[in-house]
Length: 465
Image (tube, rainbow, N blue to C red; front, top):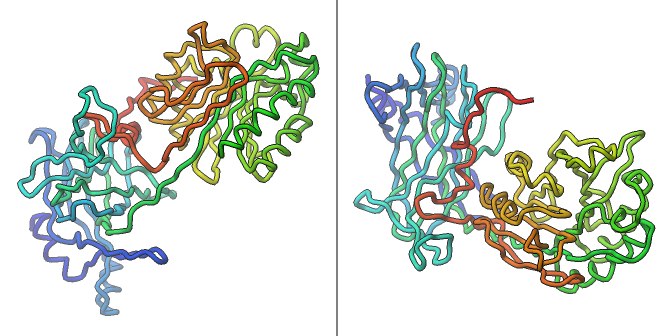
């Protein structure tokens, strides 16, 4: 019996599970109808199998319940490079929001993020592509709406066996059908991906996640002690508070700047005097602060960025991983981790100055979920700021000591497309902009590029130390 007929026959026992959120009306879409199999070329077609878990089927029959575990399986034979997918098309309502979820289990597959992906394609009644409804987007053709390119659900959760993939999407206004594809791509010989029947649920509109981002452009020239340096930032922080900023980024090693002292002489433990000072301000202003300091940990010194929360506590810190010659010669030690921190509005990562010269730091922070990267930076090529934001589709906030007229790095906030959303012009200024973290950016020919980073980014030829 073919896979298509098998699923149709088995659907007597199978129904899509419906889940509801409190106070939100949800309606599931039945996806148990027959699925079809496809491959780009017949000679690379993998093996397709439809399976049902016998134990759960016995339980369903015994208890007279219409539930049983069923799987859409794709596997490779002895050859490498095979590619194919299961496909199902279901009707949708244009403008309606949907939540998509599916579970996958892989065996013998080294890189599931590339080799076992789900893809969603919105089409009209004739099966043709539709346009995105948003009138504002990144485009090389001014004034045109982008085509609704495929959406790529992201990994939501994972245990030792199964990974859940999903996302929330608004059907384009002209969409009549959603084409769901469950892929096997380029897996190793004898590798397998096992997909559950997906869930597609009509839900209410995804709420906005608006956040006001701010950067401070200032050189603390007065004073010679860490105390005198940090206190110069208080009026600027309060000015950001007046503009209702949620996250404010301060510059790099601000207690060291212009002191004439060594890193060792200004270094302090974290938590310590400077974090305590800024924690009080963060609590008074009910905001998150990113502060550049020099940390002492035993006999080691680190260039750090510290994230302080509106409750007055240290949320976390990042130790600069790429050190320039001057910091190496001064005896600083590089960090070795890329932490990302949950805040009340989203996920924040941090990098520091020379990190921006290397794509790996921002990419790893993005890989770990960062939606915003705070960047205390002494100086850097401004093109790299745009590149780090654009290549990862994150918001980037830089705070620098560099004068604007030098045509070098600026204290600015960069958008998903690498453009400058707002920039400070004069020392002693604070600039703020508001963004919606729930709103993707669509490109012509690419669609939501951020969702494609994981399934499309290349495999390195060999592990790098």
